[in-house]
Image (cartoon, rainbow, N blue to C red; front, side, top):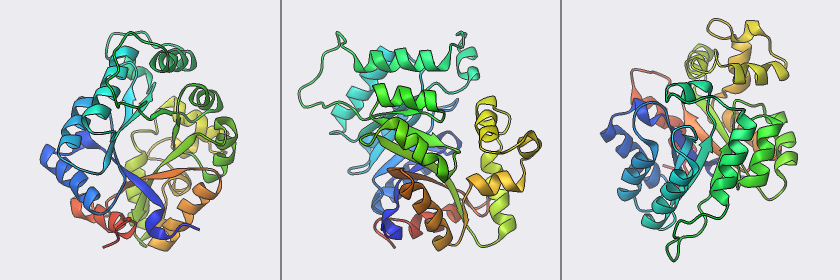
Amino acid sequence: MKTMNSLVSGVILAADTMSSDDLLRTVQRLESLGYDQAWVTDMYGREIYVTAAWLLARTTRIRVASGIAHIYGRDATASIQAGRTLSELSNGRFIQGVGVSHPIAATMRGLEWENPIDKASSYLAAMRGETPLSVRAGVDTVPLYLAAHGPKMLGVAARHADGANIYMQLPEYMADARAILGPDKVLNVLLPCCLTTDREVGLAAGRAALSIYLPLPAYQRQWAKQGFAESDWSGKGSDRLVEAYIPWGDAGAIAARMREYLDAGATNIIVSSLPTDRRDAESKWSLLEAFAPMRV
């Protein structure tokens, strides 16, 4: 069984909500704590690959990942170039996570939203197919992960990627995901957690983390399949929904939830540390230090 300080492989950061100084200090601090990976999100602010390059240039060991780069934001050729360039210039420390995102990612760019499965299949096939792009000596294939929750998208990841990133799913779904992906693919679980024994604080932190996903039909469909109803995601979200998807408690309780995912078929836990006090950025570090590979 993994010890508590070997359960978490990486940390995902809402990079767009952070100042550049805070983002850099955070990634460098994660590196000093021994974390293997720092994932940065692709929202509506900084360009994700430029951000990754900047962080890679200012660190020495930690790997930086796009988590995830929207495929409507750039064509497959541009994504191949970005991944290979970042891998070459960082001595293989870049990880490429991509995904279809949601319809707004297409419409805000004046593009038509396409069938997600068809779009992801053709995009990843192009990324992993033959291209006229030159490959520098010593640049291996960049690790490529697809954001995938449902069985069809997981099938795309199984055919065209090195694995999948899965989010807002219950531990018992990991066995199904593993069966679809196959034994040799990576299954990354992105898991928001809050280190607190105060239930009200844990629920408040979890509800804040869930808030941007509550109105999205893709997540609502997944929650419905897993036994939740519209009453769970309407308004601010039910306590039941929050407690199902956002682990909180002391370090032992959170570690137990992480092990459920790993025992059911997940490969890596990529944690999002939720602050116990949103006015105090330092409050997120209690969890990150508790689970650090080089524990402080």
